Amino acid sequence: MPSNAEKLYSLISEDTDKKNKLFQIALTNPKSALDKICQIGEENNLKVSKEEVIEYLSTLDDLPTKLWLIKVRGGL
Image 1 (cartoon, rainbow, N blue to C red):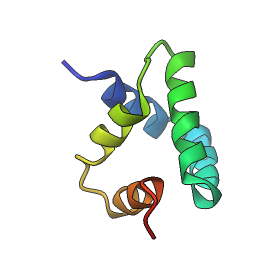
Image 2 (cartoon, rainbow, N blue to C red):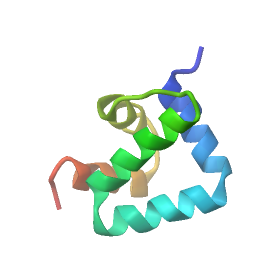
Image 3 (cartoon, rainbow, N blue to C red):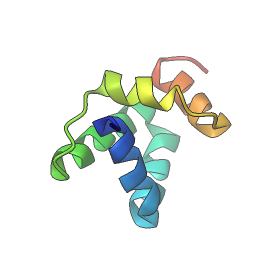
């Protein structure tokens, strides 16, 4: 059974507008983008913690996502 983080990722991935807005936020403030992801989850009854989002995203084989996660964790 998919986790809420996985369901939320699918939901955001399918919505070009949401995905683009998150990308714009992530460029300037990666941690704020993480907060926004959790907020979108709550709005869609898919409650997730920041840690759950980070954990799920770290399983993806996607270089831009991995670089963003490094920034969220305080690197780069």
